[in-house]
Image (cartoon, rainbow, N blue to C red; front, side, top):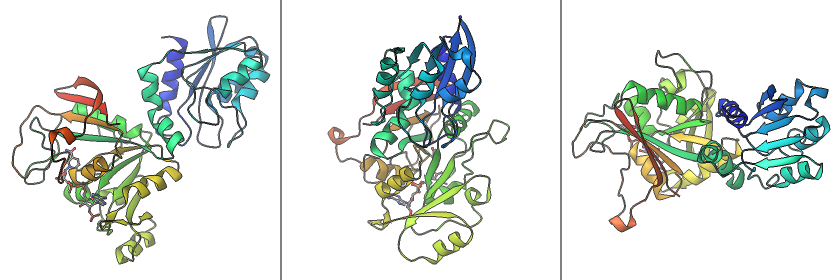
Length: 360
Ligand SMILES: NC(=O)c1ccc[n+]([C@@H]2O[C@H](COP(=O)([O-])OP(=O)(O)OC[C@H]3O[C@@H](n4cnc5c(N)ncnc54)[C@H](OP(=O)(O)O)[C@@H]3O)[C@@H](O)[C@H]2O)c1
């Protein structure tokens, strides 16, 4: 594994945990040996480069640093990493990708170069772009990156006509979904899914044990119809209910229970999804894994609020004219108006197919 791959592996470990900080890993090498490593900490804590330098004193002099993201060069919650790298006497810095944060983009690199440090930026890599896709959207728009994950049969059904949907896909695909949850800042469903499936929305291993990193759970529920006994409220982890600003006794009950509520103006009597996502962004949530169902998916797609899809397609037929699909509602009226998905990748996971792609 290359030194940069080691830095990227470290970065991936902090996905879903350090938001709104970007996930960053750093490796310091001297005389052909890794002498130190670092991972970005929670907001207010040290960045990966500082973590890696912290263990070293004079040894950092003349070393080579590999960082998965351009080092910051401005005062945010912490001082600039570039100052610390220069002070430590690092001779060369390899960067996987420049930081699209307008306060940093190219400036971090320039500051290091001005101090006489050789800086090498890696060629474009889809793996690196994917690692930073959420952070880059968040830092340039203030909105979280939304990934729509669904599991369907070969005939495009996400549940049977009796409402049952557990489980359409096999264990391997479900493990993949739990990993996706643990790497996301938040998971989101509509109240229809909570009422139909009573999901826990926690990230678990195949034995049902909770993984170390748990996403915030978001329920889109205009009129606070959620039962106080719903698993998402009684189980581990933090849950946010998004509802309308208008007066509602159920909302008061939720607040009295200590549950955090996000309020939005009404959009045709339902939650204003753009207002909701802006508020989530203001709270520092950079990535949302949206897990259905088709009613809310339809609204999000119609409003161009989904960035990426991850569909798991199981080798079975469910059928039924009224069985739900990933994209319900009125749909697009003609093929020419249909929503295209680009940059597709396909992978077999157990006996299921995972298809990934981007909407915009
Ligand atoms: N296989 C899978 O991947 C999968 C995943 C999830 C669900 N499912 C299945 O899907 C079915 C549930 O589907 P569903 O469509 O009823 O659930 P949903 O999309 O999760 O929830 C729909 C509800 O969200 C609320 N909502 C609030 N704001 C909205 C907005 N702006 N636009 C649209 N909806 C908004 C609405 O209720 P209010 O107006 O009361 O707020 C709406 O009825 C179940 O059978 C479940 O098993 C399958």
